[in-house]
Image (cartoon, rainbow over all chains, first blue to last red; front, side, top):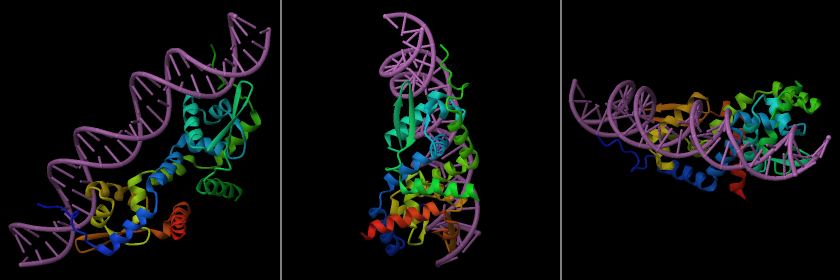
Length: 118
Length: 118
DNA sequence: GAATCATATGAACAATCATTCATATGTCTT
DNA sequence: AAGACATATGAATGATTGTTCATATGATTC
């Protein structure tokens, strides 16, 4: 009946090692970062912005999506410092925030570009 | 009343360029991959496995989580070829599937290790 | 300053995802 | 072959996330 392996350490050395690895890293932060990239709309926005500056309207045209859906996702990306804005009259232009660009994202975009070239 | 920028192309060149970038990449696949890494439990499992082999029981001890929660997530990771299994008697050992390991994940794990070292 | 355009935002709803509980499967031991 | 153990799985529930609609804000033009 007791289906309880949770109270016994089965392979103490490996468990200890794994626990240490976990403690030394920050899974919540990592997962949070990947969550940003895990939405198709958000990834599309980032890809669209990877080489040009676009206003909200351009983005929703490009992705063929509702303006408000885009706007909500842009807010999310903005809050996490993946994109930044510049106002020009009525329009607001978005660009990648390259200084803050996480190496993983930079690599992803670079990687795409390579494939494109081949 | 017409709040419709969707019918007009505001900055045709940039939109055209962005559309091409999107077409040349695979946002759905990319997002799918990041989704795998976007769950805290899954990231923890991958980190835990980054240096040692563990059985299911060890993993749930390490993460202090229910066996069945772990098992469900392991199935997901298995289906996407991020981990592989080896049976030894009653126990099933999991390891990272290093051959298939996506460069992004490899880099992430390597990056963690570096930070740990410093 | 009223109308119009571009973007942002709040609330509601829908869809997706993770975890739980109960139980099934497969292996070992006696 | 019966009992115990390790893992897997299905169905239900709960939590999180994305999109929509309606409307607000801020800037421009007449």
